Amino acid sequence: MSKRILNVVTNVGHYDDPSHPTGLWLSELTHAWQVFEEHGFEQTIISPAGGPAPLEPRSLKFPNYDKTAKAWRADPARMALLENTVSPDRIDSADYDAIYFTGGHAVMYDFPDSEGLQRITREIYERGGIVSSVCHGYCGLLNTKLSDGSHLVAGRRVTGFAWQEEVLIRVDKLVPYNAEDEMKKRGARYEKGKLPFLSYAVVDGNLVTGQNPGSAKETAKKVAALL
Image 1 (cartoon, helix red, strand yellow):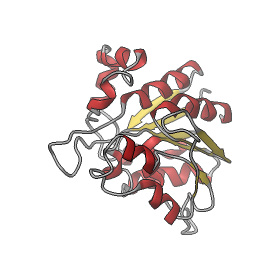
Image 2: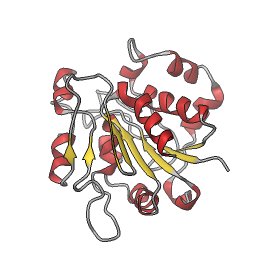
Image 3: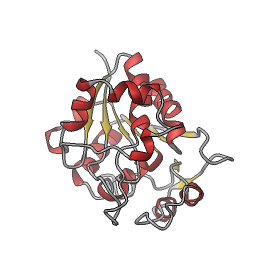
């Protein structure tokens, strides 16, 4: 039986300031999707509220807009998957072997406090399935607690979009919080690559995290290897 993966995307389309659009960083989905597809895994796209997932405009420009992202946008069936994402209450976590949180700054708003996503993540993790994220996707792990009340990320090696990277792309004044700091506050052993924006991924048991958009493929390959 083929392995099954949940890909998590955002429902949010802008920062606190509505004049600044954001959304799903498309290549973080398409790079991983391609890796998982090549391994024959079955994939489902979910979001905190279900329904449409807006796209981050910056992810649709050079150099981030690569052939996998272009092919996805040119395929009506694939775009329909992002218009009709599944809500967590329709998911039985027992049907899935892994969960993969995509990024884009939008996820900082709707990932952390989604009880549905927390439930699915906890259940997959506690029975030995893979929990993974790339870039800002790690915001989806910030408030997830295990059955014993401890934070899932406490004491674990974790990476995700670095504060240094927020500053370099000049959104440090726009974002609602410093995700790297919040991770550390929850006891995560945060780490990052030597240079910003280059691929960097970390495996700690059944937890796999990637630092930035360029890390999606490496993260997905590490998930696939564990599966």
